[in-house]
Length: 168
Image 1 (cartoon, rainbow, N blue to C red):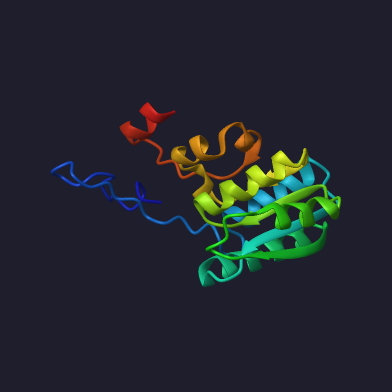
Image 2 (spheres, helix red, strand yellow; image 1 turned 90 degrees about the vertical axis):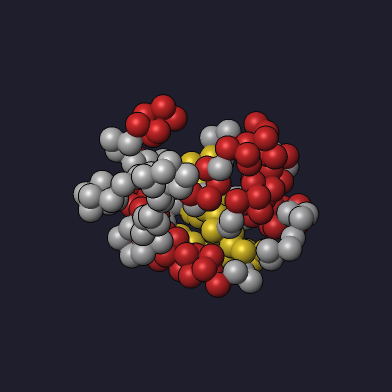
């Protein structure tokens, strides 16, 4: 990680924060580990994956989520496609809920993902929702309110960084 490489977390003048991208979406990476842990811990049998299909990076990430679900022994019921420009997720949320899965795993960016989770929760979905780290942006919590409660997601943390200690 950044500290192991001897890289500073902040520029010498304090104007910039260096935030290397942790390889979350690679085989064996954070998403694979998270999916495996969730499936075992919650004894999940069925999963639906929802993705922003017109975003190439997200679609690539979706492949990691899906392969991790299958490798962990759960059944992937379906992949539901949404688009970056979507603002109404009632159809996708209803489709996910109708499949009666144990969990919904999302490969969506920030505000799009928050809106989808909100649509799920507003329709009464009580199951596990797991998302990528882009959902961890604190401004999204004001957008989605309490509907983001109990959403599981990884978040970057830089051990030993005084700013990380303050945030925790």
